[in-house]
Image (spheres, one colour):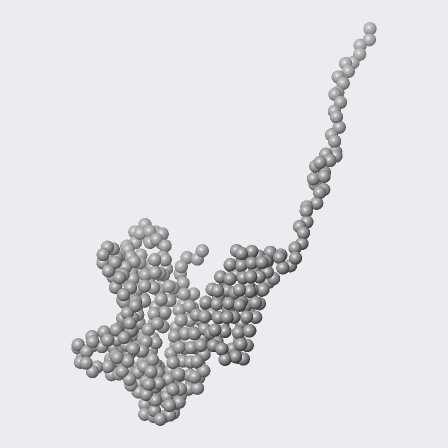
Length: 381
C-alpha cells in the first residue's frame, strides 16, 4: 500500500488589474484649458501705461502755450486745461475700464491738482525772494551792520545777531515751561483743572501776535516805564506765542508712548516721577525735539510783537537786557518802509534780510527732520 504526499490546495485566480484609465478620465486630463478670446486694445479693461499722465501733460502744455500766446487770464486758462484733462481721462477710462475706475482716476487728478494749487504760492514766494534777495547776498551783508549807512552798502549782521539772541532767550523761557506743562496735563492732570488748562492752551494757540507784543510791553512798562525797549521784551512776547505750540506737540508725543512701558516700570517698583524721567521722556524725545524746533521756526519770523518791544537799532547789541535790539523781520520792514534817496539799495537789503530769514527757518525745519533719526528711541516694529 503506497502513501501520497498531501497536495497544496489550488490557489484562486486573481483578475488582472487594468493598467489603462477609463476613457472619461483620460479625456478630462487631456482636454486643454479654454483660451480666452483677445479683445480689442481700446476695450482691454485697462488704459495704456501712463495714459492719464500723458493726457494731463498734454493739457498742461496747451495751457502754457495759451498763456504765452494770448492775453487771457492765466488762472482761467489753467482751470480750463484742468477741466479738459479731467474730462478726457474720465471719459476714456469710463469706456475702457468702467465707471468705478474712471471715478478713481478723476479724483486722483483733482486731488493732485489741488496740491499743486496749494504749493504754487509757496514756490512763487520762494522764487521772488531768492531772485530779488541774491543781489545783496554777499559777504558784506553778513559781516557789516547798518550803522551810519545812508545809501548803498552796509549789511544786516546786527539784525542776524539780534534775531538769534532773542529767539534763544524765547526758547530758554518757553521750552521748560511747555514741556513741564505737557507732562502735567498728560501724566498728572485730572478733573476740572486739566480741562481748564487745556482750554487756555487752545486759546493761546490762536492768539494774535500783536496781542503778545502788547502784553510784553505792558508788563515791562509797569516796572521800567512806558518808553523802555529791550531785547528780552521781544523774547517774552515770542515765548507767549511759543509756549502753547510746545505744550501741544509735547503732549501729543507723550500720548504716543505705550502704557505698557509705564506699567512695566511701575511693576519694578520705580516711582512715577522717575518713570517719567527715565522711560517716558527718552521714548518721546525725538518728537519733543521736533516740536520744539518747529515752534522756534514758527516764532522767528514774527514782526508785530518785535516792533513794539525791541524797537530799531543800527548797531550790534549782544545783551538782551541792555537797550534796543534789531532783528531780521523788523530790519526788513524798516528798510522797505523808510527808503532813502537810493530806493533800490534799501529794497535790496530788505529782500536780502527776508531771504536770510527764510534760509534760517528752512535750516531749522531741516534739523527738525534730521534730529529724530539721531535721538529716536521709539520701539521699531
